[in-house]
Image (cartoon, rainbow, N blue to C red; front, side, top):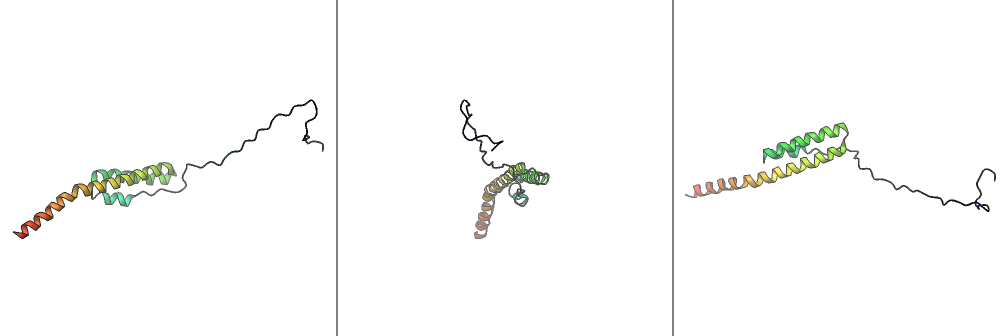
Length: 114
């Protein structure tokens, strides 16, 4: 058994404790697939509240740019913002546009009744 250290330390020598390092698998934070751009939702939102929907369209286009360049983390962030802006535009548009529409319908019904 020449060339191999002996398992039993010889007299007069001290054996250093061995350190074993076990590396845990790391979860990668980088994404590997493109994020949805929600451009269709953003375009539909423009009919409800165009001021906010313009920002949604800009974020949708930004998502496409990041997806094409391979920066999927930034694409995911822009995608989330595009979706949020679109939903806010639709809800705000419905809230602001519903009362005038209801008022017009009620006035037409009252006018026909007289």
